Length: 190
Image 1 (spheres, rainbow, N blue to C red):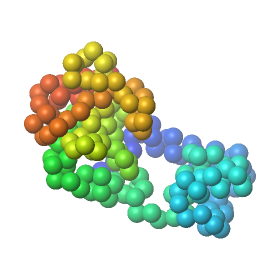
Image 2: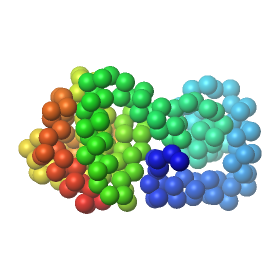
Image 3: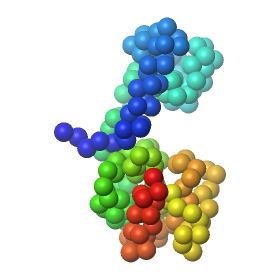
Image 4: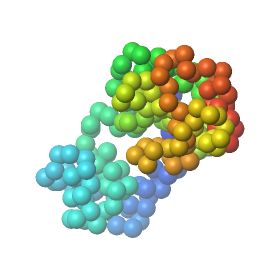
C-alpha cells in the first residue's frame, strides 16, 4: 500500500470540490472530463483560462477536472515522481532527506509533494521545503519569526502556506539539532 500523500483534511477538501462540482453545475466529473478533452489548449494555465472563459469554472474545480482528464505524470497522485523530479540534484536531495527524516519521525505526519515544493502536514501544513535557485534549499516553518535568528520572513513569491516563515539551508549540515527542534515546534502548533 502506498504511503498517504494527502492529509485527512486535504482528502476531504478534494472530495468536496468534486461533490460541489456536480451539485453546483449539474455535471459529473466524468462529464467535465469529456468537456476538458475538447479544450484546444495544451498548457495547464491556458486550460484554466479556457475553462473560466468558456464554462465559468474557476481554478480549483478546473484544476481538478484537468487533472482527471490529462495524465501529466506530475500530479498529486504521483508523489514519488514529484519528489524525484524536484529533488534531483544530489546536494539538494541530501538536504531534503535530512528534513524529511526529521519531519517524518514525528507522529501523524503526511508528506505531500507538489511541483515546486514538498509539504509536511499534521492536521494542517506545518512545514515545506523547496530547492533554492542559488543552491541549497529553503525550509518553511509554521513558527513565529522570532523563534530563531536564522528565520527570515516568507517571500510573497513562495507558493506554500502564508503562515510559514523561511529558513535558508546551504547544505545538509544546516539541518542541525536547532532546525530539528524548529520542525518539531512547528509540528506541535499544527
